[in-house]
Length: 107
Image 1 (cartoon, rainbow, N blue to C red):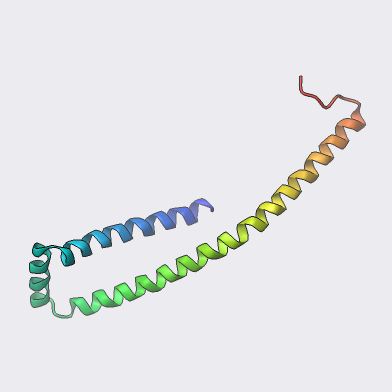
Image 2 (tube, one colour; image 1 turned 90 degrees about the horizontal axis):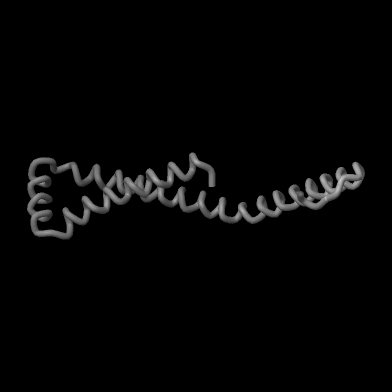
């Protein structure tokens, strides 16, 4: 995984953790229930907007999971190609050394 993708993943995880902590407070504590009631009274359409945001996050999460699955499927094939490439390079170097008459062992 490259740095851009891992940075995006870590950012997403941090945002998810923050949202989870907030939701745990709001829905898991007595004080959170009181805060929720006050928010409902002062901002009646807020929960509809939050639902919309959560739906968007859920969709984005699905996209991230799909992308990670593609990377996971692709990785072994790319690794095989890289190993084969390195094997060809080793053979080329061996051939070059044999042609030059220099020994192959390390000093």
